[in-house]
Image 1 (cartoon, rainbow, N blue to C red):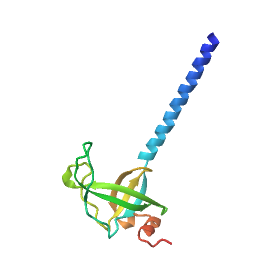
Image 2 (cartoon, rainbow, N blue to C red; image 1 turned 180 degrees about the vertical axis):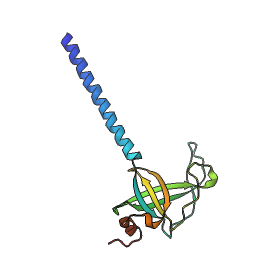
Image 3 (spheres, helix red, strand yellow; image 1 turned 120 degrees about the horizontal axis):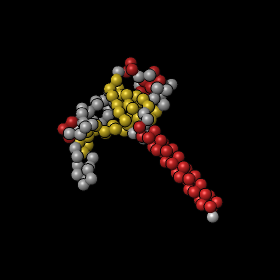
Image 4 (cartoon, helix red, strand yellow; image 1 turned 30 degrees about the horizontal axis):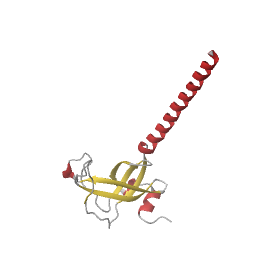
Length: 141
């Protein structure tokens, strides 16, 4: 009887350890997919539609304000493309992410994880790696 209790406890211990390892691995992957960012570079196209849209709703399906959706092709330092999306809310909505819309022709540095845009900023073309700039400007081979 004592041996069978030891076996049961050993099996339960192994299962508990396996569960902890699984949760740790999945948690690490979740974190990496959402928050570990890489640099991407983009330019808002000169013909980009700058019409703000009323599209965001709260839990009661009430409109929350105007915002500008940006859907751009961005490139990493090696010139590899990635589709990115982010929204800037109108400065009058009171959102923490509210501000001025980024006008066409503006170059951007975008911090993007596998799943999210974690930040962005306006930069000069001279700050963009050559491979990415060539793709943005359409001069890449």
